Length: 407
Image (cartoon, rainbow, N blue to C red; front, side, top):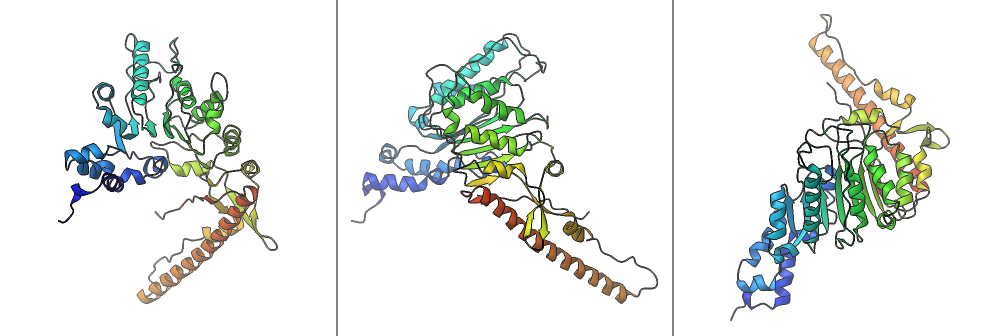
């Protein structure tokens, strides 16, 4: 008698189910779509094959448990349904959660009680998923800047994290903090304090205030280091992704990170926010790794950035992305800047003469570009060596580049 699926032993069926569930092979955090490129990856697709496999028979549903589910909640009503109506077996299978519930209009009567109720509901929701490992919160329900509530005016209330509430399995957390003086910052600090196994943190400043969005990051880190919060909550971090505004110097932010996260392994410090912001404007305001060519010593830094001195202090840092670019000094850059070649047609040129002149100009431009690219590559390698010399544990990093396109 030929064996079939239902004749297999239970351990074999569970092994098949494990490999059918794509979420088992997604890293924590899901570095890629959301953590690096600001997209939202929550989807039911990772568990589609697993759910189909469990649907074959009652025996498979009993042997194979749900796992690796993604949940994306965008309304208070759906949040309450997950709390009160979802089966416990489904709750145990949720591994990743995106919470994007709009904050209620604070201009309405009794809004402090509405916020308190919403915040309490969020706590019940997070505590109801025992296998939850990755959480992304877009609208932390303590922000008092929604609706018609005047900016700069604060109601006389505070929302605190209940004593004894611990979310022990969450390893990765992403938070969006919209304003520099938002009560969501205090709540986010309390949230960090109650995640004993958190290793990956992403803090996003998402506001049209370009120069002020360094404050949520700084205030969150600063408040986390003072009582009643436990400073060790941040010391356990190994991966940090921060997106903030232009006003924050890189070396100052790195000093703060080292002080509060001494064991950090991976840092992504992206000092610009989203929306209509043009990244080229960011590079105009940024200090670059400017390199110059010395005949005896080769490529070296024209002016040593303060961030190199800060890197001396890190003992475990392996991955670093500061959104920095390497540029050549003015003399080397000037050779490439003269890159617009062409010929003005006139009646004295024959068609073939004009064509030959254009070909020659194109070849000259291509040769200049090739020489510049070779020099830039050498300068980038020299700048990378300078980073590694100051931080020997460094294994991976990136240089960004401004690319000028012809109109």
